[in-house]
Image (cartoon, rainbow, N blue to C red):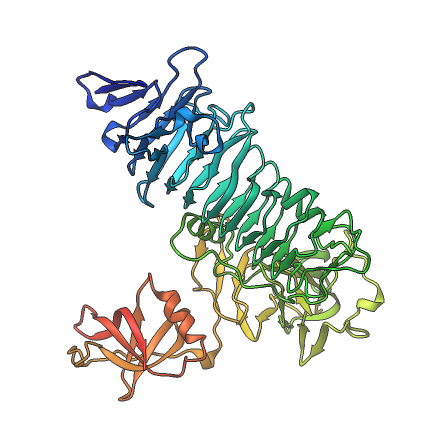
Length: 629
């Protein structure tokens, strides 16, 4: 089925052409929208076309309201744009608005309310779409709403911006794969919980005044956020990642305050760059990690004796910012003496578009549950692992895979009985393994390394976020050795773990379970992990009545973390000594967080269903919720 709308200034013409295959249903829009109109999912896709060769803009005008329902896909012909503007309020463009008989001015609006499961799509009509295929969507109309919409492949080079928004609600939207234009141009506007990524220009350009909050802004070719503001502006809680330009930029002479607080700047060309800051600008409690050129920088400070405030920030290290050009560089104009040693807590919470993409980013980079990654290796230095008297070079690399610096880490190496320790170092070895006598474990050890009770103990002062440090040591196979050299035992934060040479092992910072990662980057749960004997707890099956208590709870008791056959379990023990394993794959993090909280020793009441095995024995509880008593 194919529909064609002719939305004329004076009349609405409507023609329908019907095909036998309903899969070919589409709606053609090739004239302006001049009366209240609704685009429904049944009409989708909506094809925005020009009526003549040089006609490249479809407008919502004459005070009309265009409503787009969830799930609608709007496709644009090459170069086409959609404008909803009410500039008549500024003294020109009077045809956009309509004055009714009562004298009231009626302004055009766009009401595009998608949902998280049925977003509204604005995209290219081309079968093989590319960045800049079509023009722009301009929403300069008070009272417009754009929620859960996705804008793709627009922003052609001749346009100022892919999407322009002014005085409207704009949240939970996605702008990606745009051309060389600015991805989002805003004025007098709040931008919240959106995703703006992989566009060919700047991410957001803020004019006049704006509030930018809880957005995911990544991989744009220009700056993430550029400011040209006349009123105080706030930029808070954004994840600003891998943009080719700076995280926040102002290249003019800024005379109004800007607050940048609680943002995360990671792997951009630079963090925050202001040509000259206003004295009222504050950069507080942000995280700066691996930005190529600088963290905070300005070119001019002509206020003698005045210092700009930049407190509580973290720079990927635990010693504060450095005034050397590089990722930790901060201009001397800024007071960063009060800094966060191990990073500020950061998350984009909730069910927003930005929160969903941020969680995907954490999962893809193993940042949700893998604190460290260990890489043990062994190479023949002189001889080989089967020849007595040979020298073997070992290395264990600890990679901090979180987004915070970590201190208090300990790696212990228990020496095998068939080998002797000769040399060790926590520094990177040169290709020819040129250790000096300063690294001889039997003579001089650095403050980070000690040798005690036949164990080499390495305690790095700190490992920065997403950084690796390596312990090297050389062992000599004893002349009396009869078989292939044994592997040393490795303990991380007081807990041993098994390993295979060349494998990557993910380790919890607090010495929790290890995970062996195979060559396909698939995670295998820890059947290989050796657990300290005292922590092995055999949970006896409970055989009890499955009658809930008066309040509906199944059992009340204290929860403990117990490892059974190498698997971490959460076990509820009641006052009468019965034990239940708690199950819920969707809520395991809630119970895990509880066992690490200050309330962990308080009893909880558990609600849900009993888990009964095939022998009719109650062994656990599939819980839906729990309450602290």
